[in-house]
Image (tube, rainbow, N blue to C red; front, side, top):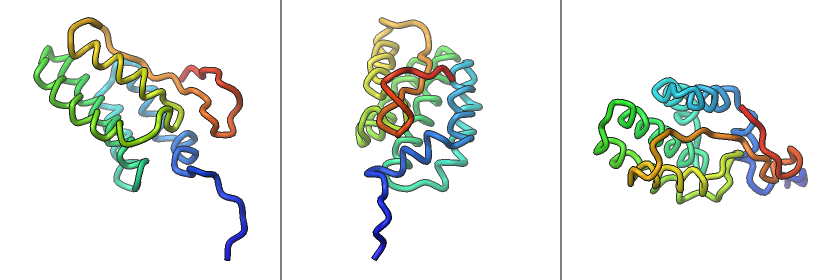
Length: 137
């Protein structure tokens, strides 16, 4: 029997510190949504459970924003709808990303109420990383 204390949710801990995950966030925040998608895809292939759904949702958000950049509102809406299904399956925040705020922003883009792309700021969410401050990536 393993008596070593394990974090309640080890998946977000691993993602929070993952190089490819953080690289994807940096690319996303620079508006390089396709490249963010590519950075996250390698991590997604080796993930399971909530982490897999979370990363797939981020990839779908990035794909939605590629369509938005191309002026394709239908593509934005279709990919955002897919992303909502995956992201709603995980708690917010997850792996440092406030999914509630991201969802509200994307909903605003879907209705044209918001006309610029979101950025992702990592929040310390009980990952043993400190208090509730934001960390710019």
